[in-house]
Length: 301
Image 1 (cartoon, rainbow, N blue to C red):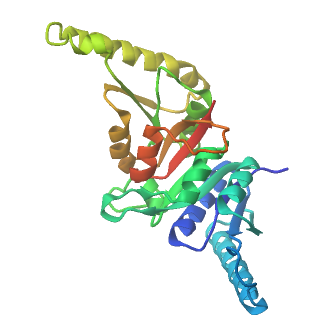
Image 2 (cartoon, helix red, strand yellow; image 1 turned 90 degrees about the horizontal axis):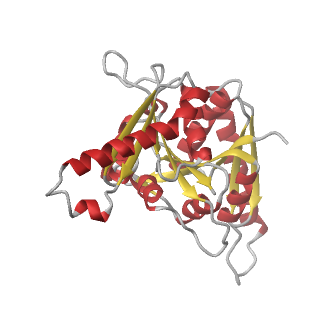
Image 3 (cartoon, helix red, strand yellow; image 1 turned 135 degrees about the vertical axis):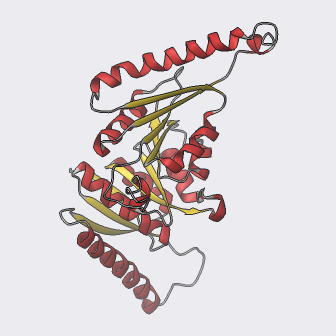
């Protein structure tokens, strides 16, 4: 079965932005694009809807899917676009759809002046349970946002891509997350910016006043650790320029701030196969809610 870029589509502005991003990613990966609309079943117990009402909902979803697919084919010639409507609970259908996809793309509502994401309950659950990478795209996102401005400072989708941004814990690196980020940077022919935040051990913290050189020693050790983790990936992707940033502190704020100058943010989350809970790490959670660029959440063991 041919793998696809699958996007959840509900007709909202955020899902349309997700579909546009997914089409651009399909071009980069040379993969077909699948538009998927999930129609939630009517809550019960209620009276059965009239045939006219039921038919109206079906007609709307079919028209929405068809028109979106037609528009994407016009704007992204060469991309094979299919569409499908499935009845069911959105988080269940989308999580299952992710299993057969190379990538699942969902929309998120922007938080207005805060410039971040408002991740709905469906998106949150899907991100927490999908084993394939999930990308969140905010409403209003444009192709030009992922590129450097032109020489006159005007937004353009014809210039070089902004860097791909990776949040990495050098103490617990995961190959699936690192490889995803390097591959995305290679596809975009852009720089990979790697952010690693670390905390001083408690026994160093209390001794800093007496031995300030301790901070420098730990800083050098952490920077060297990051370089060592990335070394084999630099060899595997020699075409990707890598910028390493190792610093003392939480990476969440640095990632959120840097997202404004990035084409894509990549973070990892631990794969949890417990169906009773949705667990996302604090760094991924912060970037999902407050990052301004598309955010890719990659599951790892």
